[in-house]
Length: 74
Image (cartoon, rainbow, N blue to C red; front, side, top):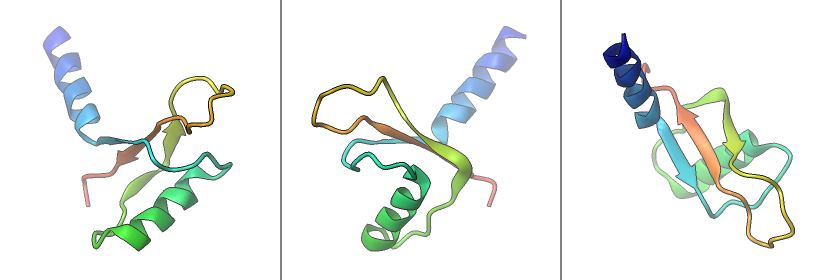
């Protein structure tokens, strides 16, 4: 059972990307899709609801990291 959970966890983590340069907005998914359209020749296949900020919001001027979960089944 432990091996099965470990393999599932590894598979899930392979689908994640952490982005550090995008400013914080209320709609992170739209921001990420726009970023992909402008900078990448590859179409974004992020999972719906798969974009979220990491960490607590603070007074630091730098944006928090954005984790994006991709759908690799397509």
